[in-house]
Image (cartoon, rainbow, N blue to C red):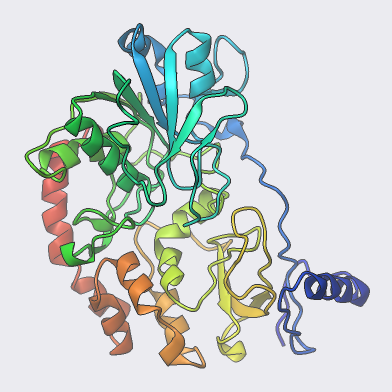
Length: 426
């Protein structure tokens, strides 16, 4: 028998939700009578508590005296999203104020905003095409860098003197903000426009792990030949992009980095604002490198619940092997979650220990305990997430986690040597 926390209080409520699902056209599969289902209906986005910010760590955006003089009397473009904030701003006296609003209040001449995946305000689904638009609050034009135009056009940069890049990253190759960084630097290099980078901590900077991307599998989910978890901040990564010649055509982007104060790669940093809709808290961010592999499989990694990237499950997993169940439903950040309306059997990892390496056991066990192995992998998607075809082949061949990890060692050691040249922090 499977027992799950936060079960529906009564049968009437459960039947009511099933009725609503049917009316809305969402497929709902009834669970076995012995299974209680966690209430996974999500509410609107609620930002995390900003009091979690470590007082000793000062993000680049807060060091206004270091960069405001650089921006004065220049036409400025901002590459940012909902994480591009200044904490406890001296002008507004709020817990935080958006960088755009702060700069405008200082009479900086912002001309436009470039928005990455999830949009300027961070509300779009993962992979959802973000259209060009206008910011309601400021009236500034917003140019999307996710969709058909991942790179700023020459026309979009024609009246710009300097570009400011300020986005909170989580240090994982298939998290697309570093791909956006690449294309922004490339466009600016081609148009002789400098880039000012306001650096922020990497919450997964305490380790380096995973398969190294093979160039033939380069995509927007991985542009460069780096391990899945790279252990660098945005500023450090920008230095690597230049130093390794990854912009192509002998291009080098002029960059000016405002470093984080009082920060090291081993420092614990709790993000006060979720970096994207489906990374709601520190636990999800810590588990994301390991559970992100499920994006290329038949397994739901918590999308359509309030515990994204903290649980996983599927209707095809063998119920006797898993002690948790939930039903994904459309919500903020996931309009069409995998297996929506279906009972997913899986695992709740919210109380698991924090990771300092990638855990492949959950992926391997899910493959071994699925009812339909031939439908487990979406080969194209899994390959671009892993950056290699080898990982799927290794799992299908029955290799253990340690045997697989041994094949990563050479690539990891080479990357660590390369990475050391570009570090700003210890």
